[in-house]
Image (cartoon, rainbow, N blue to C red; front, side, top):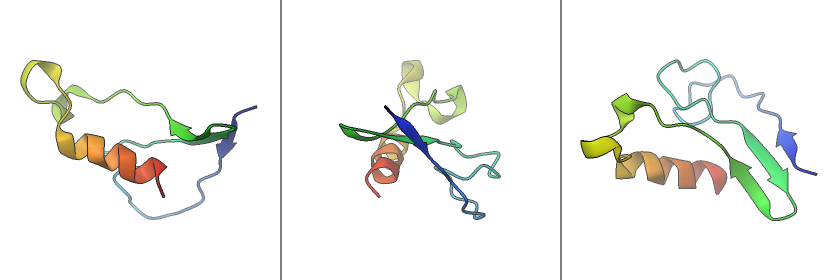
Amino acid sequence: FPREIPNHWKGRCFGCSKTNTYGLQLRFWLSEQGCFTKCTIPDHLCGIDGLVHGGILATLLDEVGE
């Protein structure tokens, strides 16, 4: 049932823009349980021992909560 939510926005959002090569380029799906995304955080956005920076985690929450 999950269906992808189309992204037609042409901006350079760090979270969801397809044109921001430095961003996460997130895609979103809608299911009966709500909105979700899947991603792999690149090493350059991680800190010590591969832990994801808190700001990146906050970005993910912000993006799926919009």
